[in-house]
Length: 405
Image 1 (spheres, rainbow, N blue to C red):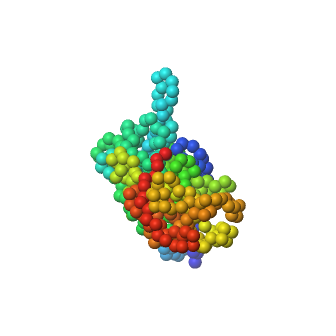
Image 2 (image 1 turned 30 degrees about the vertical axis):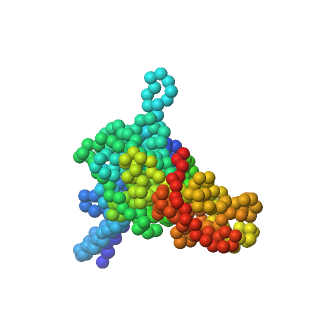
Image 3 (image 1 turned 90 degrees about the vertical axis):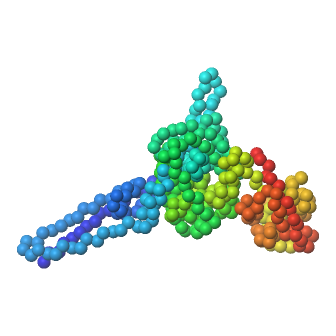
């Protein structure tokens, strides 16, 4: 008896890496994992290519029973991405910023394009500050291709957030659902939608790769507090677009992709949506958000520095300086009185050592900043546990407002 043979040939597209600096973002990289899937009926995934070539043979006398056909089900993650993209992409717009150059009858010149997404029924769109910061004119391009004027309502340079408002037709308003970034687990799916390189409403997928207490943007004054690190590609033009969980809820605002020199892939970051929630009421109302401010500069104490300087603790923050007229100054916090070398570093010594804030142990300056920005507001009081001249004490500091730049 002659058997049947079934040969399945899968065509898998290769991976390419791009690195580009320009527009409104820093250099970014694209990476994706190819997956051969069979989409559900009626669904149109953004990009899947496959082909099957069955090979059969015919028995001369006896008809052999047909071999069972095994149909491969699309992975759940692929189904999830298709659903989230279908539901959320109508909420994503392109934000175009233009500047007016000096000259006779000068016309606005497009400076860059980023992404944004609708957050309510009033035409408010959340994006990055660096997308709009130098613009004389703003426009948004809606999912149907219509471009309409927009205005800058509020901005925050430290959180790198901005609100622009446009008169979006009622039938095209699709407000997103804001999730809870505090519930994120490292390893859970992350889906980014945006307009990289002018390619509108592109989707990339990955996972939440990590959480970082504070990531300083390489340009400007932005600090990403409790930053979401993801391997979902964030490229120039993705800035201001949503990062989503598997339920289609916004968990972050895509903002930054770093391409380390010689590295095959970049590091991508998003602003947690809970950070945005703290500032949104003020930004929508056209007010500046007041960031809490203690008024000190600190240096991290490592075991080697502690040993070199003869400090009474092996970790904590060594106060370097105190801002005049700040809350710390009024509370009597002391900065260093002299400078000493410690492991190729110059640090100010003789000042207070901070070991805890509101009872929570603190080891690094970024932990201190993250606690303030996520848990306190200007005008509130924090308790600093300090060591001064070998004695531990608590100091109450009333938080001021961080000076704007």
